[in-house]
Image (tube, rainbow, N blue to C red; front, side, top):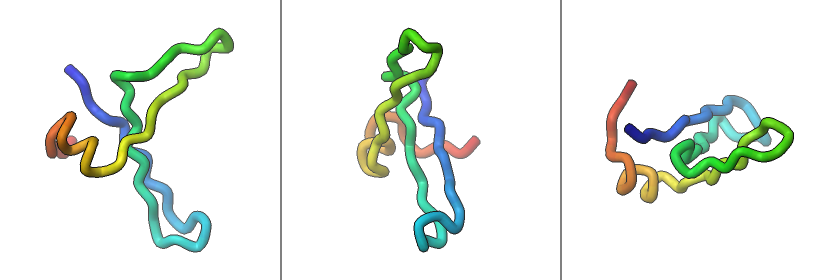
Amino acid sequence: MAFTFDVIMINLNKKAYDIHNLDMDESIALHNGTLKVPILDVNTALKKYGKHHH
């Protein structure tokens, strides 16, 4: 099962909100224990994972 992890930021950089669709299925584990995760634009995220609300 794959999904995006959506990060919604409010009142950041003079924007009302911004959404980052993180592609956890394509993440790369780094040696320091963090993950390098691609950010998908909305259209790519919808094509790859569909539109499901959880």
